[in-house]
Image (cartoon, rainbow, N blue to C red; front, side, top):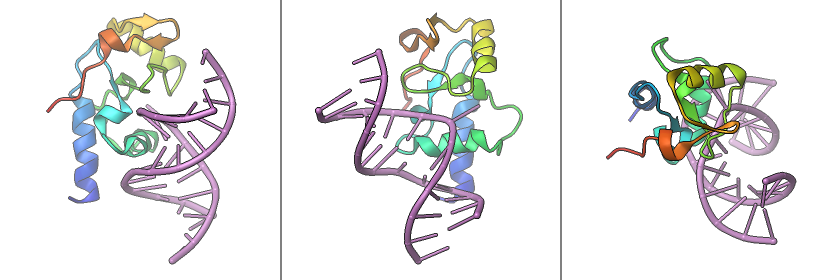
Length: 94
DNA sequence: GTGATGACGGAAA
DNA sequence: CTTTCCGCCATCA
């Protein structure tokens, strides 16, 4: 398992998020939320990665205004300033 | 080599 | 509800 493989694995998981739904950092990289966070932060990823569909475990947004707007447009349910994870979150897949 | 940092998570107070 | 503290992985000084 190389670093590139790990990156690819995480990127793949994010790319698999359907429109109108979100996943948390902990979901895309279980046990290493900082890793997925850093991957998106550094911009070390292809352009086809829906980074705005990745939110914090409590539903709050990490990036800010733009992310909230993009999610809203896709029909992601909000609960105040946070995403309603009970409706929009995709549980970790086996 | 060590130590600090970050689009984080979860438990504890 | 809030703030603290510790663990997590990969970079960077």
